[in-house]
Image (tube, rainbow, N blue to C red; front, side, top):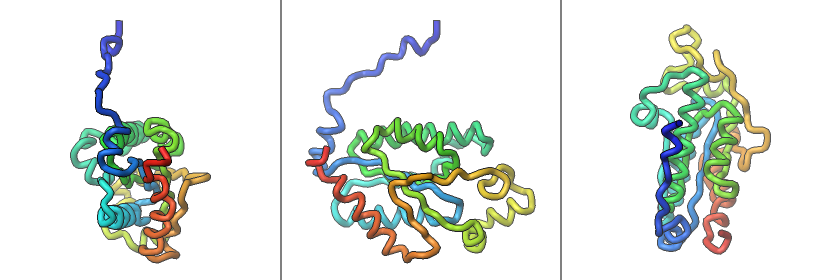
Length: 202
């Protein structure tokens, strides 16, 4: 008999709705996907600053930060990439259940994995943001020197160079980070997100 059959989740008296009411706003998962260097983390952090200043309870989960801690045991094979996103999906759900507006910035190259996270978070609680930027522009930015290393073969399974990226077909928000200023992108996000943070919409 599988040991998992003995796992029985505890039902807590304090639920997400109650936490949201205490904080005064709904909780959400805002998922940023795109190439390395597209501006996902920059945009997520700018959005968090804007929401924080308006009194929202927020948190940013970033790819490198999570890889250094929670997912330090994973490599960059397809299997590990899927497990990386699965774990993050579960973490973002827990944080949203705690009443937070969670901004997750991950390359997350596979559509199937992003859809899995949407299901984990729950329909209506997940917003997919495609930070669209041509890979040529991402390479020019290359602040971490990763593309150069990937071109030299020093990094394997690098998205856009030696590994695929499946762009969202119908993202909730489409940001073209090479064509519009950061403040314009942030305002576009706030205009879309803010109505969903209203408790009356739950």
